[in-house]
Length: 262
Ligand SMILES: NC(=O)c1ccc[n+]([C@@H]2O[C@H](COP(=O)([O-])OP(=O)(O)OC[C@H]3O[C@@H](n4cnc5c(N)ncnc54)[C@H](OP(=O)(O)O)[C@@H]3O)[C@@H](O)[C@H]2O)c1
Image (cartoon, rainbow, N blue to C red):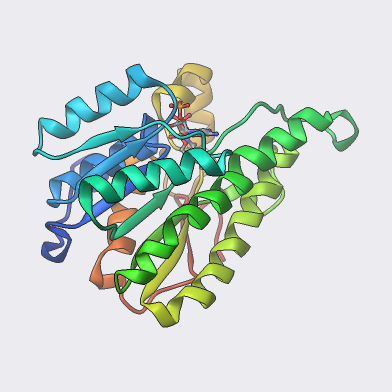
């Protein structure tokens, strides 16, 4: 631990030489997770839609080690995901770790009757369907190559009712069940599937929407009195990808500063 209570990068020697595909890799939590994987000797392909953000992340990965790349599938589009998978197979020949962190969409918090159909569908598409399609496009090669680790992304909003947009919370709850079902189906093939459910994580995007005063208020709603960082999530992801989590599958890990306890 650093003096601020943030995790420092652990080393899992068995990860060295492995290959990872990280959706949501163009910024925030996904980009930090990609860097932590690279620090452990993993060759990472980061996926997102924003080329400039992806270029910046690949540059930061290449400053750590060689062999990283970017891909630009829209995760709501199966054909684009399959094309990205094909390109990954041509370049790397195999996949060991699938990090399905892409999420978001256009929706606002508010009462059910004010949620538009567009907002609802956007939340479901960009979180639940995007995760389903990502797993659909990529897990066959994990099975074929003798196993691996899949890590999906939920939220405290998918664990309990909250002030988050309705569709977002429902979609993230769906990701948790998708994870459990996939873990049951893929376990016999050596593929572990686990989920991370973060509370408020301070990224560039969330920081832009929260004044310092609001950040302080939100921090006080957590028993561990600070906001989460992308590093907190990256540490959990690295553990779930490692052999240290070899008998853990179908689990949802709350990275939530104690705000939610299951
Ligand atoms: N930050 C938090 O407090 C928090 C808390 C709980 C859960 N989460 C979850 O953590 C994940 C990462 O969030 P973040 O805060 O790091 O946000 P972010 O910086 O906004 O990252 C979202 C990522 O998802 C990608 N993405 C979204 N929709 C996509 C789509 N249809 N196709 C392809 N890529 C798509 C974005 O790519 P482009 O920008 O390149 O399009 C970006 O890389 C999300 O699933 C989010 O719901 C975040």
